[in-house]
Length: 336
Image (cartoon, rainbow, N blue to C red; front, top):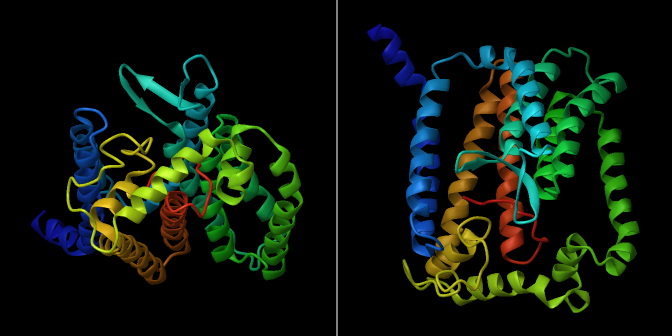
């Protein structure tokens, strides 16, 4: 028993946990600073404690056993996503993507991301043929497409796109043909170019979000507001920021969803360029650590599993920061 405990303590990646805890602590600090509603930081603290318990419980199991039950978890994720489409689903901020247990709400799409990564790792790790044939890519595509379509139907475009991040990374590491990858990239670029005229003339709120970033003169003012206020917050932080609690854009309510999707705007205003750079450096350290773990993995399933989560985390950080500094349209992707 004691030998087993010593081995568990020795094998546990304390550096990765420490980095994750640093990010979580920073998030709680900034939510407390923004304080758009009383007690939000306490709820975040409770979530942090629950997350720690989940980490220590799951690490007691061999990850291969968890991957082996991926089909059941994947099915559970699809059921939860389907329930959102029923009267049980609730709309929050224009997205019908929430389920509630009493007063506590959660987004099934976040759990489905994890379950889909597990399912893809389960399937692709069992494929021996390299490079991947068309049948394998199609089956993997179906595994990816079912939850992605369900999330898209919930009107949550940002989360739907996040599924593509780990799908591409896992297919690439599984042996996707280079010419197929290049063809896919070119197809996406062509689709974007062809869609530009339609987006400029479109009046839906999604199109307005895109125009607010790339063609602000064509966008309705109300859709430019959040981008404008976020830019002001980031710019007013300067090099060293206004200090903890010094945010005015956030605490005075100028930046909507300041405790959630736009918490990075508050962090930038309070800690400036230096603080923003350091927070992104911590995320980079986490992703680098994950890549190192993936490279050291002796089994393909471990490689795919870690790479999938690393790609998903990279997507969340890159898209959220892009939203806040007006490089990408607003699409509801959280940062911390």
